[in-house]
Image (cartoon, rainbow, N blue to C red):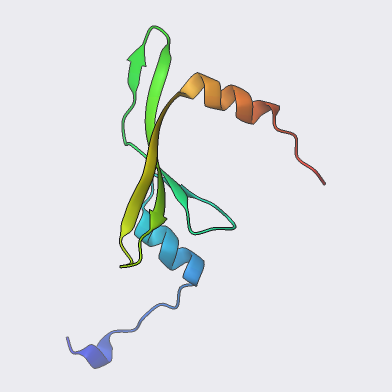
Length: 87
């Protein structure tokens, strides 16, 4: 197979960035930051603990961690369920 036979699929800038961030990430819709989740959680008596990192792109186009958080699945789901959608 030669380079001439390869057809590139056009993707949007948004999709390119999402591909770089990975499937366990949630992007900010107005900045270059995103939340990167660990692939596993830790189940304890107090709840299902999830570790996540707040990320940004460094000047060298490499992901850079700004800070880490540990939250419970129960807390985040409760808060999300209370958020009302504006029409």
